[in-house]
Image (cartoon, rainbow, N blue to C red; front, top):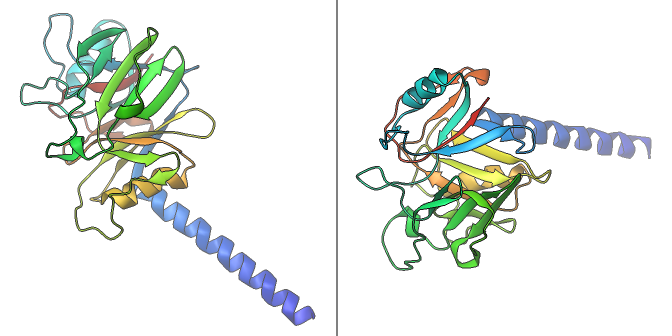
Length: 238
């Protein structure tokens, strides 16, 4: 009986060790950042006061510094057209600057249904499918993208485990505590594995933001990709 108990204990600790190792290994594959909207200032940026695209984190950082503000974190915030205008819905400071795109049958990741919308009302984040989105008067920021990564805790049904379709990818999810989780893969990854990362962290809903052009600025983790040529930029400032 004692030997059987010892064996069970050994199996348990092997399992715990494997789970911890797997989680640690997964964490090293991503640059991630948690944002509490109640205590951190998150903003969406597209054009500066001269109506010109910021385009890069470097230009945004300089503009903020000129205003006496500091860029804490930045990530490209959705797909964009050739002129760097947002693809799909974009709301900035409660102003609709690009309309909702409800096209169902079109080519590209943006139109891999269901796609979705990440939006913020006061200090509350939301991630919903485009089909389930309804306009609210108190929306401060919104960006539409696609595909959804997680929908009510389930990986997007069109993602295939082991898919050879790999790219650097970035996205956003909502954690069980209500905070936002931004993540970008440090190496090329498929949709299924990327969605699984958000699921592992406890997110119920998560949205893909973009692919091989993805960049992140996060000096607190010694990660400073300041170059780029983006449309929307999501950033924390102080």
